[in-house]
Length: 504
Image (spheres, rainbow, N blue to C red):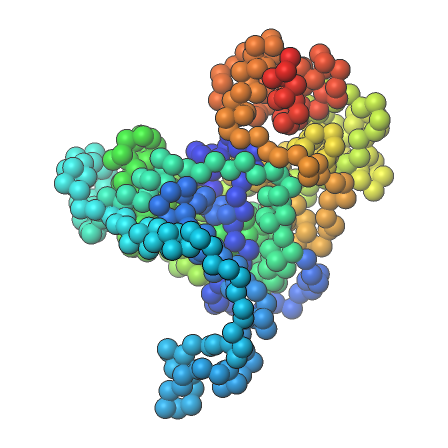
């Protein structure tokens, strides 16, 4: 969860996680409830070196596993030629399903052999090393941990077998930049598969979700949507050893204070008995469990909803993780019954300088400006609201409320917040956005966003740091420049605005 604030908050959109679990999960008895019929950790971003091809293949395998069972599983194993059987007539553990008719392939690419060799080299590359300097650092760190109240017995168990994880260091140093347009992100983050699986999970965990909603006053569909985006409903919880990852990153020193704080928190979790050292797994950057809590957030907000004395967000049973997520939102100001946002229509002649999260005004004002819900109804009064134009005046327009900002506390990227809100709506059976997106546009790269800020500064419209973050200040600066050149001042960081600045 908080992981994204470290690396992706500056980005216009995020990589979508896989849609569904490739493995079955134990479920309680289904409640008799009606669910509407149908419609990447954030999965962690793939590293641009080393394991990127391997990781892409792994994601492809997950996607294949998400295919409808009838498409990938035979109804009768005995009917498949080439299936090896055991003496009992059942398929053996080594059974291989083969096609009756080989499918003709296209021509083999010229670089196939070289790429295959690279794949093998990446797969065989060592990811852990018994580095003596790292061992010395652990000894030094343990003294600080003991001073923070961590028992030596906890340290001995936590660091047993821990080595320097070079793959984690590589991913931290070479985090891939995602320059994915919002609409492309939403296409996968709120896909038909994810909606369908979200509805299925809502049905299967309906009794647990109802109790969570009653206790924390956070709508079940919002919790389920976060679950879907953070770990694909439990499929992508992460398998990296958290103690090893946090220790490797703290030793590396690029963000030593942050990761040492997370390591201390992880040790406190172990000392409390919530899980065991090697069961404490998650993403390479420390996010854990079904809804991807960082260790410090876990200490503050995790809950033992199952009543077994442990706050187990790693279990196949997601109840503690879902309750912890609801508790997190509640503690950050969630308003029960308030929408996160709704799609609206902007009238001709609208003053686009009023758009943006900085303007928080009542519904009466927006209705007076001629803004209406997409179906033509007046905007309902759910408290102070803002008009958001995530793709400028040519894209979907939203009225957003305080709950939008509460989801931002979970992950500050607008793309993520919109995806959570929209997925929660779709799980409830509400319609897709009706307005179109400017799909001919592409997202600016990080270098281009920095260039945009430099050119805005040179033109006298920007005076802050050059950081590549298109936040409220940069949007206001773009709006000021657009106003000066006589175009719609929607604050949209488009390639066309960058090109105008380049040519001015």
